[in-house]
Length: 110
Figure: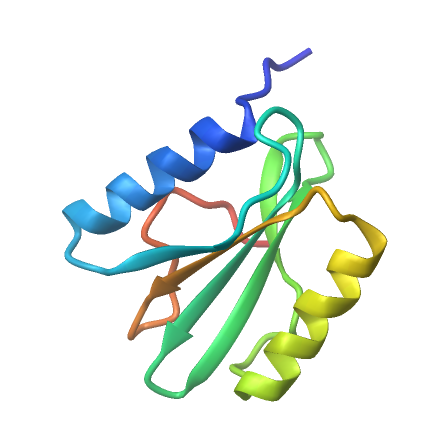
């Protein structure tokens, strides 16, 4: 079984990596510091993409393009985040400036 990193520590790491790469980041909502899930909002030139934590077929951590393959508008991204927060009030929501819509942290996208 793979060890899990606490959500608060992961968010701090991702924000630091984003800062190092010159991409601003902000915590839009703090969730449970130990076991909260994480949504990452990538803000690009063409719109937004919301990434949600997932597991691949082998059980390894991965990220799912929760709002679809292509970028969406602000209203669609906000609606997705709100639906998820109603289901899980412990979620973190972190936004990253990402002109190319790629995460500033290591991520396996599925």
